Length: 74
Image (tube, rainbow, N blue to C red):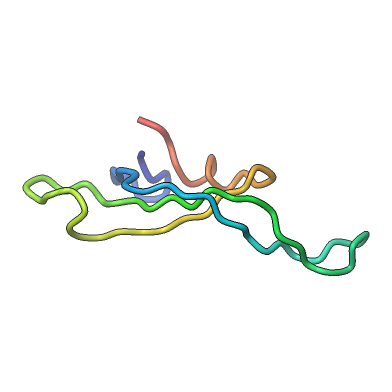
């Protein structure tokens, strides 16, 4: 994966299913849970073993487009 913001390479090292809170909408008037995928990324650096160094977690849902906005598949 490549970060669109910084142009750095990242590798997905873990993927799991979670439930994520959503903001209250006008019809339900209360927040609710939606299924999401939680990805853990490791920043690729030459000479460093996978999983050692900078790691980030990121949750993405089917209704959002934040994943496509922030990441590019390489």
